[in-house]
Length: 307
Ligand SMILES: Cc1ncc(COP(=O)(O)O)c(C=O)c1O
Image (cartoon, rainbow, N blue to C red):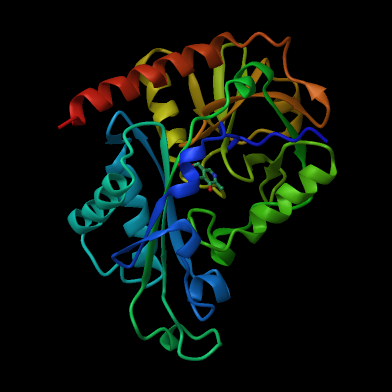
């Protein structure tokens, strides 16, 4: 099957030779290893952020760092360094790879190596493991013309008191199961409902629809507090595009005029179909306007933060 994901990127041979930061050391990707005793490997006990570099500037870094430090604090995961030191580590990795633009970074922090192979956090005694992995990465254009195919799946987003979806945790099994279910249904990505049956999010991105010129997204409960999601909401508000964070059902999603996903990597990715049903008539004027506004926002952000 011809599967696409919102993270489809152009092949870049330079990625064969990248250097990866592991607790201060820069290792060639072939030698970049963590211990099998690492809490991230053993339990998915860690937090991560996906960041994007545009013309030398890490886009919306403060928003990403707010989410990251908040998540780590909430699960008593000591980052072991302040924001300035973390930024230095990011820049050290970027410079070691001579990277300037169209870069995606996965910054990962786990509770570190355990002394014995069991769950208790106190068994991680030697400090956290910080990995910074950057790749040259440009989203493929064809997704923006074709759009992505979604399937609704049985796997739902849970209540915050089980595992809050706002944790960008290493344990992504909920999302991975949803993604597998979508793939088995012949789609590219999963559209997930909340525990009440309202449309919530996809397994890897936030989800928006457009109905009669209004932009709708979920209330924000049960889904990742996406940085791109918030930027799109703010852009709509600032530019006179009606936007609502509300509960809505599949009835309204499937009958939408347009739908799109948001995420740091792909910005806004149009949705072609849900459960095999085409969304709208294939024209996407509101999505196109939001994409243009987001590009301009990035341009201004880069100009304001370039050194
Ligand atoms: C499940 C999920 N939803 C949405 C997003 C998009 O968030 P952002 O816009 O901050 O990249 C992510 C990104 O990590 C995610 O993992």
